[in-house]
Image (cartoon, rainbow, N blue to C red; front, side, top):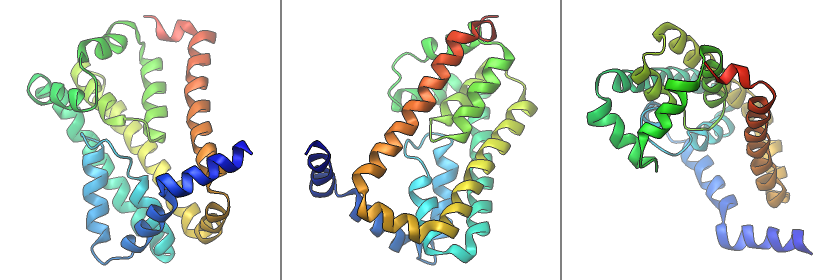
Length: 220
């Protein structure tokens, strides 16, 4: 069947399940906490890969230290967000543009104009909240916030709340239910991948529908 075809292709060609198991083993290393801090810090500045790839394995491999994992990830991510904001405020043309280009955005001005000319504060906070709570590229919005002069304290509060809330849910849930979730992933890996893709699609569709339903929040 089509489902079996997807399942066999995911297992045989992508081998993501084996990668997950390797990450879980590596997450048990004594230096993993330092690697976690570095990853979460730079993810919020320029690193394109979500820190979930290390946060989740660490929560599974060290369930009794989930709060430590949560604190390290939250503090590092928050500090990285502040650095990204500073880059947007003081070094956008020297460093910020380069980060945008590394992220695949050839014309940062078009990206910036969406928020600088059309977004109200309410809309921008909503976008920051969604990006901060999901694996979407929060670093680009952090740099944008600094460049357009978005209120620093409101940005810092949003970044701290969304980043820490996300890591709290990830570390707590995977520390408590990680082994069960891992067994289910091993059994139904194709379903798991499609569920992740579907979740991203729902978030993006929700943002689009909100824009269609309430355009007044996105037009100054």
